[in-house]
Length: 291
Image (tube, rainbow, N blue to C red; front, side, top):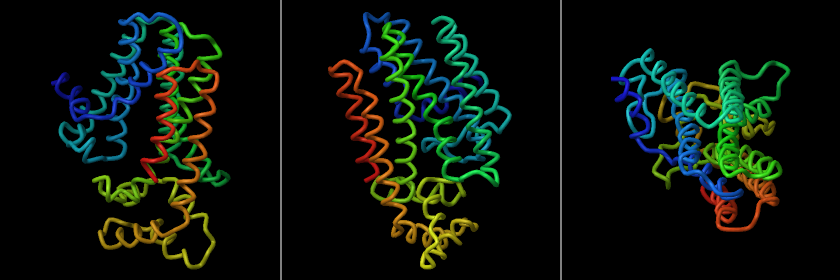
């Protein structure tokens, strides 16, 4: 039962972006122990997948990666415990790598939890909703991607300068990928994904938060819809149409382009070679996927 439930999300697919980043980042130091590299990649993927089990419970999700979510198939209590089980497996694996890895994993786990709490509670009266959202994205998404890059560098014995560059790049590119996903949620007809999933569920995204900042009377209807119940397909379609035509979409794309270049700039200290070329290509990909 535990094995079946633990394999459920992994078997449903996924990009395996975090393990890939571990492997790419391992090219910026010296010789690499293959077993340690595998352990490092396993830790970040187990941590990511475990967080998805918990996220689906908190979001009351029906689907994950196109398959029935674990909380729907086995109920919330099982999904929570399976997430805990995977976190435990990640912890035992990272312990084999050494105390420096354990410390970084603990810091990352804390940020994942802080980000989830901040998202659940929402911005305070004194908070800027957009800045609050960007911090949530940095904690929930950017932190583990940054750790993936750093783990790869650590396995290869990379210098402190290189590790710092990898950390900054990983966090920034992680945030950019999420912001790109935000745009795709609205403009996704050509990708095969159902558009407006986050919009329907009332999940804050970069385009909706930028749209809500508008004081132009002609955008009042969109602001009203964003703040309303969008469970009705017709109302959701109206909101999607208005948001697609809103300047917030192009503003969001401009922000993705800007931050992708910031991420690219963090690669400067890294030695040239195929791995650096691949990381540069990620900066291009994150822009083109939502343009």
